[in-house]
Length: 68
Image 1 (cartoon, rainbow, N blue to C red):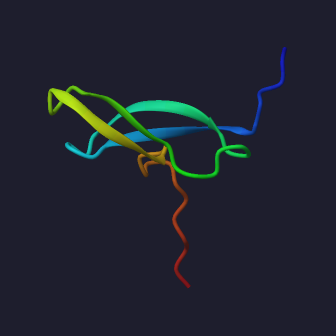
Image 2 (cartoon, rainbow, N blue to C red):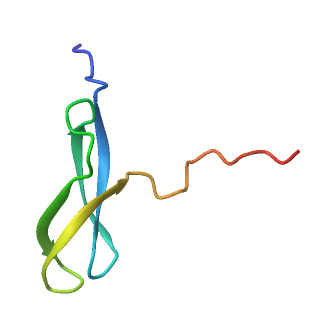
C-alpha cells in the first residue's frame, strides 16, 4: 500500500456571503503558506462568492485544554 503524503492537508473553504463551509480541498502546506481564496458557487446564496480557507474540523474532535 502506498504511503500517504503528509505534506498535503485537508482545508475547508468558507463562503464570504453566507458563512457556510461548503467545499473542502487539499493543499500542500510546504509550498503554499498563504491562505487560499477561490471564487465558487454558493448554493445557499445562489450566486458565485469568494471562498477563503479555514481549518477542516468543525470543532467536534478538537482537544480542549484542561483546567488546573
